[in-house]
Amino acid sequence: MTEDNPTQSDATPDGARTGVWLIGARGSVATTAVAGCAALASGMHPPTGMVTETDAFAGSGLPPLGQLVFGGHDTASCPLPKRAEHLVAGGVLPHGLPAAVYDGLAAADACIRPGGPLPGGSLSGGPLPGGSLRPSGAEGEDPREEDELIDAFAADITAFTRDNALARTIVVNVASTEGSCRGDDAAMPPSSRYAAAALRAGCPYVNFTPSTGLHHPRLRGEAGRRGLPHAGRDGKTGQTLLRSVLAPMFAQRALPVRAWSGTNLLGGGDGSALADPGAAAAKNAGKERVLADNLGGLPEGQLHIDDVPALGDWKTAWDHVAFDGFLGSRMILQTVWQGCDSALAAPLVLDLARIVARAHEAGIEGAVDGLGFYFKDPDSGPADLPGQWHELLALAGRLRAAA
Ligand SMILES: NC(=O)c1ccc[n+]([C@@H]2O[C@H](COP(=O)([O-])OP(=O)(O)OC[C@H]3O[C@@H](n4cnc5c(N)ncnc54)[C@H](O)[C@@H]3O)[C@@H](O)[C@H]2O)c1
Image (cartoon, rainbow, N blue to C red):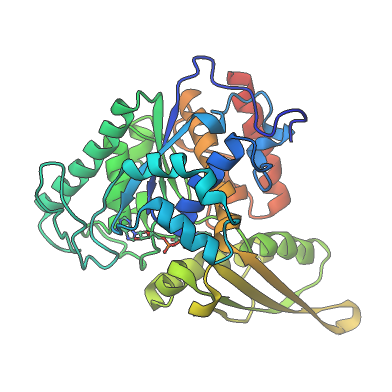
C-alpha cells in the first residue's frame, strides 16, 4: 500500500475518467464494487484486498479509483442504494456505508440499462432505447434478433462512454453464472452476446464468471482482431485460491495426493444460480482444472456446491485432501474457508478493471498475459499462485515501462 494516500496517486496523465460497465450491475458483487470504490476513493476505508493499491503497481499508470465511472446492464430493477441496504442487512457491507456513498450508488444506478434474456433465454429484459422490448432471443432463435440485441447492448455502452466523456470503458461480466454452452456455432448464450457487444462498442472485456463470454466459437480471436485486450475466466476468490497454493505444495514436496474432495455451502443469488446443475458444472470445471494442472492429473474425489439460502452471501468451503507420506504413511489435510463472497470478489473486479484499462491504453491486444493470478480458468500461464504472482509483477512492470 502506498504510505500517505489510501489510493494510488499515479493518475493517467490526461486525467480522463474510465468507465466500468458491469453486466449484472445490480448483483451483490457489482453493488459491493461500486459502493466499495466510492468508500475507498473518499478515504473512508483502506483498500484491503486490492493488489493494485500495493507497491507492486506503483507507477504503472492505472486509472485512480476516484476516476472510475460505473454503469451496466441488468435484468433486475432494484435500485442500487436499496440493493446496498440489503447487503448491509446480510452483513456484507458495513452499517452506514450506503448512506455515506449514496451519490456514487445513485449515479451508477442512473447508468444501468435493461439487460437481455436471463440464462436459458427465458425472459426479455425490458425496453430498448426506442421503447420496444429487448428481444427474448432464446438459444437457437432468429440470428437477426441476436444481432439486434448485440447492437442494442453496444449502443448502450457507446452512449455511456460518450455521455460521460470517458477515455475508455471496460466491460466486466459479473452476471449470474449460466450453464455450459454447446461447443458449436449455435446461437450465443447471453454472456457471449454481451461480450460481442463490448467488442462492437470497441471496449476491452473481462469475464469474472465461468460463463462462455468470449469463448464462444464465433467470437474466438475476435478481440485480438479488433485490437482489444481481454481477460478471464471466473474470479479466483476462495476455495480455488487456496487450492492454487496447496496443490503446488504437494507436488513440490513429492507428496502424492490420492484424493481431493470439496464441498461449498453458499446462498445469495450466486447460490441459487449454482443450484442449477449446468451452472454448477461450469463453475466446478474451473475449480478442478486448478488441481489437474498443478498435480498433473485429477485425483479421486468430488466437488459439490450446495445452495443454502440462509447463508446469504457468506460461503463455507471444506476441502479434504488425502495424501501419501514417506514409506506409504497415509495422511489427511482438511481446510475450512469461511468468507463473504462479494467482499472477496469486489476488490478483484476493481483491480481487473483498472489493469485492463491500463493495458488498453498501453496498446496490449488479445488475452492479457499475467492475469492468471485472478482467475480459476485463465487463458494462459502457470497454474500455481506463486508462478501467477510472478507473472502479475511482470505485467505491472510492462505497464510501468509503457507509462
Ligand atoms: N466470490 C464471488 O462472489 C465470485 C467469485 C467468482 C465468480 N463470481 C461470479 O460473479 C457473478 C456474480 O455473483 P453475485 O454474487 O453478484 O450474483 P448475484 O446473483 O447477486 O448477481 C447477478 C446479477 O446478474 C443479473 N443478471 C442475470 N442474468 C442477466 C442477464 N442476462 N443480463 C444482465 N444481468 C443479468 C441478476 O439480475 C443479478 O443482479 C456470478 O456469476 C458468480 O459466479 C463470484
